[in-house]
Length: 225
Image (spheres, one colour):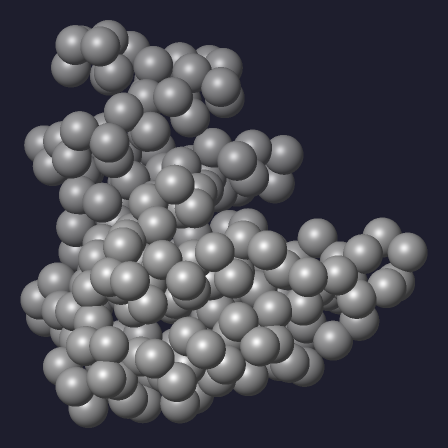
């Protein structure tokens, strides 16, 4: 898709077209679309029906590192709605826009301190999709905080269909010092349980597989959204 075609999609009257345009901007990291994309997002956010398009726009703003959007993204994160897709992607974009470098884990730690399951999900996803490598002290703090994050108050009673966000942290662990990550990964394997539609515990096989891969230093790209 050419830049003109992307611009045409972004300005289309159809939400699906705008969504596709935003996705292309993020995928190709077309920083020159920053201002235009942000202006379109500010209009898009007014229509609750187009939440999927809003998500793609927020993702793209993070991918192209459009710092001017930070205030808007921070507002979503601070509203801190649990079980909300827009809040999840805002959590990821928040980390991307605030970090001082690709390996600055401080925004992740900040979000873990107060975040709902959605904010936490987004923060940990940023670690995985960008293959961030925080320093040793930050890694220790993140792993310690998230050891039992599957028992977060927002998750209790809502486990069915809800991702255990430790999976994304486990994916990121593939690039970190095994001496720091092995206890966390093995603990996740031991506690990899979900709730079925019948309310019964079931083994979380994808979490186990991701952890096993990371223990071998293998990055589980196929498990990323």
